[in-house]
Amino acid sequence: MDDLKPAIPDDQGALLPRLARQAIAYRQETGAALPAATNLPQALAQPGAAFVSLHNEEALRGCMGTLIARKPLVESVMDSAVEAAFDDPRFEPVAAEELPGLSIHVSVLGEPESLYAESDEDLLAKLVPGEDGLILHDGHRRATFLPAVWESLPDPRDFLVQLKAKAGLMPDHWSPQLQFARYRATTFRDTPS
Image (tube, rainbow, N blue to C red; front, top):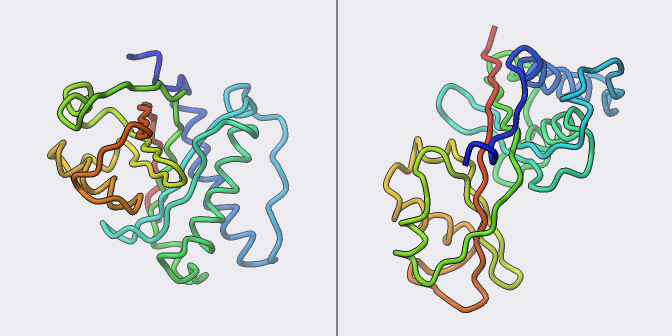
């Protein structure tokens, strides 16, 4: 299972939330995307999937990301940060005066691993609470919870029920088309100054 977790050295990963904050500030100031950084450590220049979560104290203020590594990790992080700040449909855009008070969490995702399950109980028996992120896919409905969501939904059954709700499914929904994948993540944080 440890091979599901991305290997990012702490000193390199610590750059990601700072770059996320810079990307948001640059967009607020100029309306443009922050130019891609150069001379990056190899781990940050490789393709990577990431989610960026913005928090005002404990309250979520925005969260966006990608499950598939299509761009260099640093670009995925900067794009996701801007989307979390300005395009998360659950929230108003982040105001410039708000940004210094927000904490920024960057979750770098490992490669998803398909999980076969015959029932909710079977699936729950295979999950590792607190460590596994979960992707649910059923037809055109799709949702994911990052491993950090276990902090607010520590009961595995509640975790699954809320993930189904996020996908627009009923709590007891089960179908032959229902697919799952789990992943691990390494999270780096930048707290308000």
